Structure formats: C-alpha cells, structure tokens
Length: 248
Image (cartoon, rainbow, N blue to C red; front, side):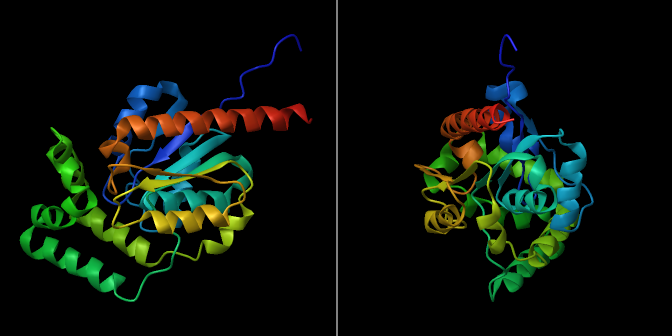
C-alpha cells in the first residue's frame, strides 16, 4: 500500500443516571465526528438492555466511554462484544455490587419524587454531584437540572432498579486487553479517586487520571480537561489499532 489509512475509531459516549447526550455536549462540540454521544436509554430497565441498545447503534468497531452509570453500561458492552471494542473508558463510575444501604437510599429518593415531584428529587440529588465551587458556574446547574427534569420520574425509577440489579463486573476487569481509560474528578464524593485507582489497577495497562476541581459531573464541570484527556487517549487507541493491523 502506498499510504496507511487512518485507523482512528469513533468513541461512543454513554450518559449516566437520568442524563443524556447533553452531559457530553462539550466533548461533542470540540471533537466532532471523533465521538458519538448516546442520547439516553429509552425504556431499557436493565444494564444489559442498555448495552444491547448501544451495540445496535454503534459502528462495527468503536471505543466506548461511559460516565457514571454509563461506565457500568460500557462494561456490559465489553461483556457482550469484546471483539468490537478498540478501547474502553470508565469515567466517574464504580464496579462494586450494591452496598448494604444503597437500595434504601435510592428508594427514599424515589419516594420523595413520587410525593413531592421530580423537582424535589433533583433538588436533593443533583447539587452533591457537583463540586461546590462549580455550582456557581454560569448556566451549569440550570442545564444539568433541565436535563434531569426532562428524564422524568419513570426513567429515574427504571434506571435505579437497573443499577440495584447490576451484575458482578470486577472479574471482567483483568480480561480487558484494549486500551482503557479510568478517570474521575478529584472532589467526586460519589465515585472518589481511590475507587478509580483500584479499577485502573485491575485492568492491564490502563491509563488513570484524576481531574482537579471537579465533582461527579466531570464532562461538564471541567470540559476542557475532559476533552484533552479523551483526545490523548483516542490517539493512543488509534495507535494501538494501527499496531494491531500492521501485524496482519
């Protein structure tokens, strides 16, 4: 061949609980065709069903990057179709099974939504997800609040039930052989750095990053840093694809 074709693959970006493609809006704007943001999971009521939706929409070969609950969906995508993945990114997420009081806490939040409305649920749930200084950023909280409001109470219930019924995934981590990115915000109280350090340590050769000045909503709290991290990692994914193709 006279020249090497580009072996860059698109990154399919997955949202978390009651989020949609808007959580990845800065990265879509900055990276263009290099990324595809999934706009939610519709009526899916299990992580497996969410992964099936992603696989139906995704290109034949792609990198998958999941934020929060989306990280767990990304791992189900890996479980179902490891040979289609050129890379996997796990952002502000977890791999543990439900903790003793998790169901109680999630259903208490749901009950608040049922009794007082979705606004009350969001008012209780959303602010702790954002590092306190970032809550003062213009439009950030309004945009996040609107996204969660648009999801609605029924979707919240479906998705928390999916999370509470989540399968074991820790045994999947050592099986990941494609380039992996593990990252979180330095001030993420929900999915803290120590949790991600352990995830990265379990995946052979994983890249690990902690983004300063961010809570759980990393892609919109520190969009430039998240975009830069994705850009560097996608270059690494493309290099790995080229190296693999050169062997054949």
